[in-house]
Image (tube, rainbow, N blue to C red; front, side):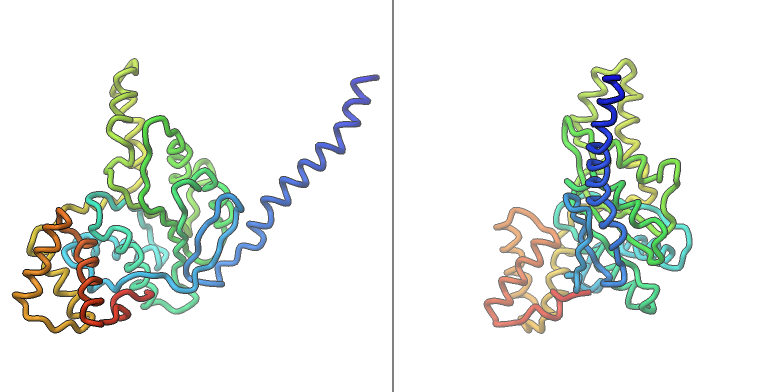
Length: 297
């Protein structure tokens, strides 16, 4: 009798808990409207999307020295936009070489050739919000617009196990990957995981090869790997020249290159980011606007 009474007392409480959980999750999906913009940011704590009216970035013509990576990512993205098979992509390698800039620039370039109804949506998800990725997948499944989910600087350190759910979600689990969704990520690491993370677990495993393969299997979910490597001086100077031409900076070539080399020496390296920071400094010195380059795409 007591057990029945307890169950009856618990029933209203359980109903209230269920209603509260449903109220928290359901609105994120019922109100998910991808017609509001071409870019969104996913907020995992609130399980909702916020529209981005303009996506900041640069035009593809300013991304010098990465033509092969540009061609491959653009081809993959164009196929996806046409409803053809396409791969998840990871852009990995040296810092400041245009990985995240390329994702945004390709998205903008592909969209410019598409009618409004077929334009791709770019949704940025932060590394710490990957734990809510399953909720976002559920909300995107069945949407008419095609979506590129973008995570910048994706990597996992020792003791971080949040990469495990991501592996199955990239393949879609038993439901399969949503046909309207691609996942693009950038990382400084080829396999997304710290080397010591792989080596530490391999050293304590019964079969070290199985442990290493289990870790590397995350990056294996990405069919398209694009490597970015440190640029040489010629590529660095070509980047500077392209930016300078874009803002109408008319300096003698020898002066521009001499100052660019000095800037890189002070910074301790050459990259697309270093070239951009140099041009920002020059633009301020010569009262030039960066609007032509640093614009929405």
